[in-house]
Length: 396
Length: 196
Image (cartoon, rainbow over all chains, first blue to last red; front, side, top):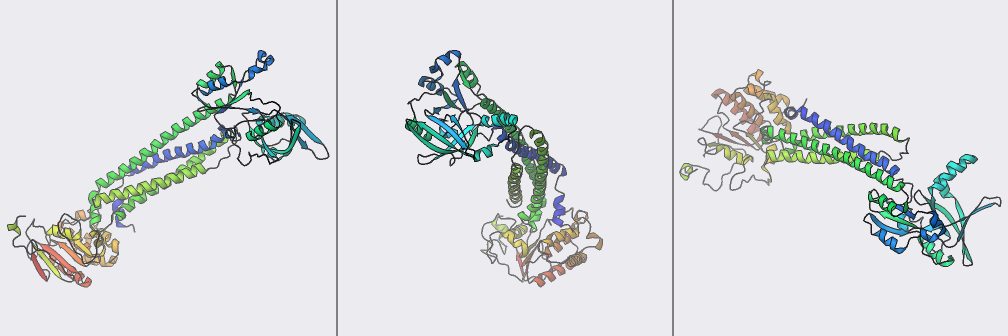
């Protein structure tokens, strides 16, 4: 048999208000869950997680013209140019590439006595620009191990060009990282052998990078000329989507790799769009919460006499509040479960379309986690408010 | 109230008044002299008074007494008009499950025509409502039963029936009884009669 108190309180509810709340919170929460999930899904693809090179940074070099081919000095930056660039508002930091001034050759043993070797060059950039795990990107003068970073394009060139035409197997970044080879550096009549391994790939820097302190040390010991001339710069922007950037560099006759700027713009637009959608969804949620709280307040005001009578005959404020707490909590939990299901379903739809563009690796954690947090938060707020409303009404 | 109005009072102007468990008290006064206020002070639903009420035990909130120490027949009854007579009684009984369903029905049957117990309280006469509220007050354990003008709308015969029910329950629980009335009533054997 239904407890008498529930029969009394059931009549105080207004079905239209509850349905209104259930619908609006369903819409709001579903959108919020989706924005979180979409952001988590697409962000790695946009920021190309595989790149070891920091975002918001581009490499800058001077345009090579016919005139400069003859007079090589023209491709170098001098201090004045560096200072001028540093003063631009959108530039956060300008750093130089350091290049090797000694001979480098890499070799790999193919077994059966054969050896393959090639001449190389090294460059380095300040370590802070690289996003390689710090223990892999470490070098000290006692160690014979030398980590290097190569351009992603080298591998693409092999996989999609060479391997394709020669019917050789393709190699993944992961496989290539397992292979170790030998590096021989020579200069000043001295030489030294290192073992080396590729610890990262970069799509932004077309160069073979080694740790900066290694290059400093090696240049001192094996280098031929003490030159600090530099033909390439690393420029870090405060915001790579700043519109003045392309204009400035074009006007100064400088070359920048534009992909970073394009991606940054895309990321910016994408973020802004998501943020906008999220803000609207958040407003919907806040409004629906305010709506149900106001409805409850109205119920309490309208039925003040009922609640006071219940209190008079011995029902505690918590006992009186329990029914409303349960109703609102149950609706909220069911709604959030429903939102989760709807969000999962919509995600399934968009994943099918997006997967043709890039791989989506992320899990469903954003949906579940956000739903859980929202659920806990809403239940806490409602249960606290309902108790307080009843308490202040029956026992002011 | 002015001093002349309360000069004959057994309660006003006295430093303390005490009610003892197991005894029956009547508080008699004219309308507007504070009978209801006195009971409300004791029951804890009106706290606008000076002085202290000692319940003989530590009580932080008099509300706690409503569970099994104090029961109160309100002058304005505090019934739920949409509920039936039986449901009103059951609503109270659900707090402590003090009476069985059969006991509740028996109590109601003693004071109401049989067909009335399942009718919404709003269809009952004032006297019938008063009897429902009185029965409701009996459906919990208590150490004191407070009845505020319990017979104001009830004829003599029904009043005596109700008084016998109340007496029986109060004695069974070994509780104290405090009854207010406009004029002296003789349905109970009071130990003390106070003029307010």
